[in-house]
Length: 232
Image (tube, rainbow, N blue to C red; front, side, top):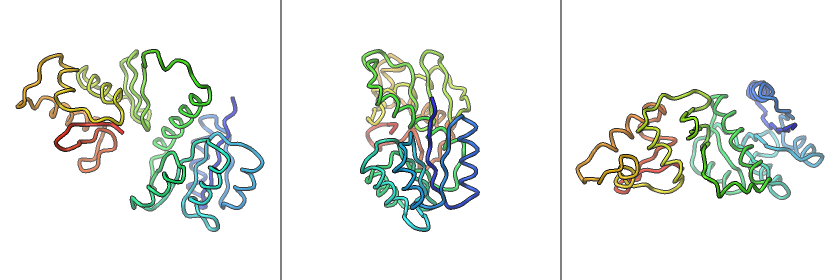
């Protein structure tokens, strides 16, 4: 199946880089350096995914995103050099599905693209398999599979102990929910939790190291102080 991806980016080196990686994965790329020409193409065909730069020479990426959302529901990933939270909130509020700050790792972008395409495809097919036990989670490039007992981050396999794997799987199963240390311990170890037990904290710390998580702002396993941990 042919997958058409719209790339609107006025920095040629970045646009070319994205095009190379996307084409290498078999996607058809429609590349534009301004919003006006991109809008014309949007009127002519429906895409499977769009990657939009926020700062364009004519129509900014937020307005372009809004225009797309008036008629279409395919995934939109925003690119920006800005890091302010307000920009991220603006993009997500008007209908963007994901948000990547420059400079970025091309492999991370590809992982995000695949995740969004997979979700879009599953949604459109109205899959009836939701009642079945889930065997894989893909969270922004972090893929964990229960059947093969493997975990990859942006395509690179991680070596996890059985305990670390079980902790990560349980957090992914409860994505968006806060899981307490007591709940994690009793689920993974199958024993009664004691208040002075630091086992969970130690394993979370090692798991974050393997995920290459920044100490202050982890991307995946987050601490909700006084409550527990969660993956968003």
